[in-house]
Length: 401
Image 1 (cartoon, helix red, strand yellow):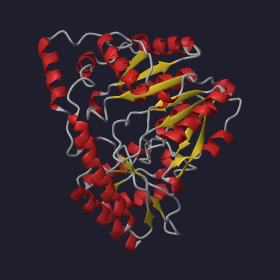
Image 2 (cartoon, rainbow, N blue to C red; image 1 turned 90 degrees about the horizontal axis):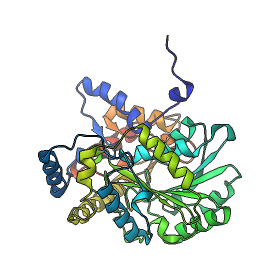
Image 3 (tube, rainbow, N blue to C red; image 1 turned 180 degrees about the vertical axis):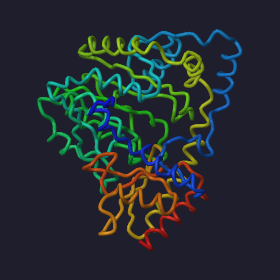
């Protein structure tokens, strides 16, 4: 028998792991509500026409199926540098950009390059967190350390807790803003405090801003790199969410390196990029027009998300045993559930809910065992009628349990 490595056996990804039991009950004819994955196009959102047309044009022109530049198409990197320079008041060049097959590949490159397992390297991550940061930190032999996001303060960063967890082994601080899984949008003051700590301790910042155009509150939340001239920042972003192309798998990272400490690091990232050959050539060519094309779909997307966030917040808080904060951005809401003596943990609750109602939520401890426990995450992407139907089933389930 071929035995898999322990590190691979230890991988857990609650967002998709819950699909396995859901598919089993779906096979038996039960209606299933998949509220687990942040894919807008599974609901009533669609890719903007100008991007579809660009993709069709590229395919019709032919000669787009070849391997591209490992670092990414030059015209796309030019468009990305222009956009990030404008947003963050930077001076990035195309050599400061690496295009990836979705932001997930970028995180994989980043943590694989950052962590030296034998040194016990620590990655400081806001908890609850998008699971890949915790899972890949462990996979590469590092130690994920979560700092508290304060639920009572709209899931804002607990800066004192963050600072107390910095050690000589801390390699980087990760900030996800707008936040997955909580839907929080961090204030400028909070971000400035994180930057100040990073500057004082000489720590690299990793900023995941994949939802940066999907803010539907009135809060102003600038890009993290715009707040510092002295701290090295590695930015992660992409087109999946704001441009409604999750299946195109097109992301990128950029290096803002005022102190020149990332030169060798970037070269190692490029080695990993060469190892996987290149991102998808036709999709790179199509995405180069994303930032320069019509942007009206973003306003419409945020209008829909706000209405649905307001509904989800109100309806979930009406359910006995469930409380939640209102999301301000991204695709998610992260409610707390009173487990009482009915369920031993949030995973058991979510599996029981799937079995009895067909409503699929990832369990909160899958987003961090400490700060995510006793919660679950739901997308706010479905039409209100679908959410009403699903949340009604959750309401009945809680009443009868």
